[in-house]
Length: 132
Image 1: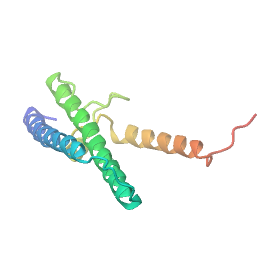
Image 2 (image 1 turned 90 degrees about the vertical axis):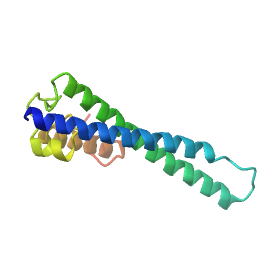
Image 3 (image 1 turned 30 degrees about the vertical axis):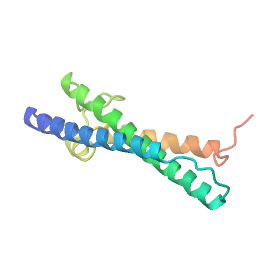
């Protein structure tokens, strides 16, 4: 990837970092607003619990992406941007344009997802039975 495209990518990542930082701050404020009321109404308690769960999941997803974006900016600053952290091959420019914070080439990403799916199935008892 040429210097001009890397500079544009860094700017895009910085903009996304600023947007997500504001989102995380707002979600923390919203979480503080959701208080458990002294109520015996199961409907109210369920709504409060649901709101907290949704907010927590949104916050965690944004925070995880924010960490990946920060790491991508750091890799640009160190001249390491665009190299797959597993196989060390160059990540395709199209992939970086689609997911600029990625650290894996498409081949390694697919392998990682396949491995994660296999682990999930094994934990759920859906994988192959171990031979003893």
